[in-house]
Length: 346
Ligand code: KG4
Ligand code: ZN
Image (cartoon, rainbow, N blue to C red; front, side):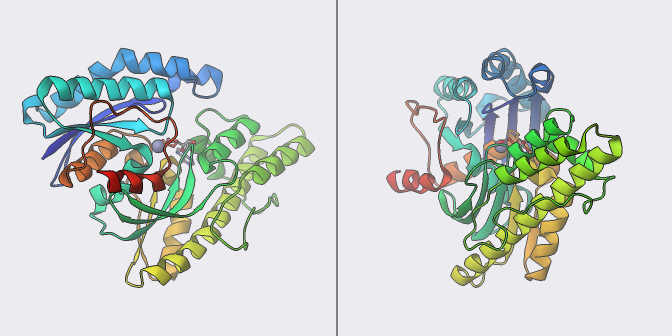
């Protein structure tokens, strides 16, 4: 089985080919960063236009890299939500057109499910596992019980963690996207110099909150006046340490809930763009070790948005016969736990 996966939900135009032996035959990611950078964030209209202009070329490059033609494919998968509607329409329409023209099955992939299942592509992780999903739009703890079977233990009540990184980078005068810039600045900084809050730490449940941390950082910046590079490094390190403490605290609680339900479950997986952060990976890896759990984090290029994760999620669904009609409409909002309802319907 070989599946083509298309990702256009945000600011990356990506296409990849993955097979059922877990080999990534091709993986092309074209970032729109340069187009959005002058605006300090993703501009939906610019994004949709860039997807239209580049997607055909990106798909052709993926097929070329894998030395495959459409005749050798088993299915066409595309991210159908959640995300920016313009981009979703471009990717889904392209996938449906190829599927219709070639008589291939079409698979509508939930972007969060694609992040969630990546650890099965990279490390062959068995169900069930505990997942910390941290991206630009989401921050959730989930028990992954099967394809389309997710139980959410906690989510953010305000900002997503990637969003907190991006906004903090702006406050510190760092570039866009903020996550990698904050990580770079923090590498040389003192994480103890600024005493920032750890929202929700020690509270019952597994929910997150990052708005207060961002506000505290804004106050610290305002109180400080002009920032030297050392100040920026120390603020970035203090912010990243606070995020690490919060993620570790919430995840520790989720581990207890997960183990209570699945005593034999032994794997903690981290996924999504923020999972590319080395300091946070180290923090969660240590937490897993303390709890006697295996820790799995996909390679960085498979943490941030890519086509391979979409192709893999499509392949997992195709194997179970979970394909979609060509009338499937993209969903700008599509919570992952509702994917269980999709499974039940099919
Ligand atoms: O998963 P992703 O590529 O797109 C979404 O689905 O949202 O995640 C993008 C987010 C951005 O907020 C970006 O700043 C953050 O992931 N990110 C990072 C790092 N690399 C990307 N955050 C912290 N440290 C990083 N190294
Ligand atoms: Zn993503």
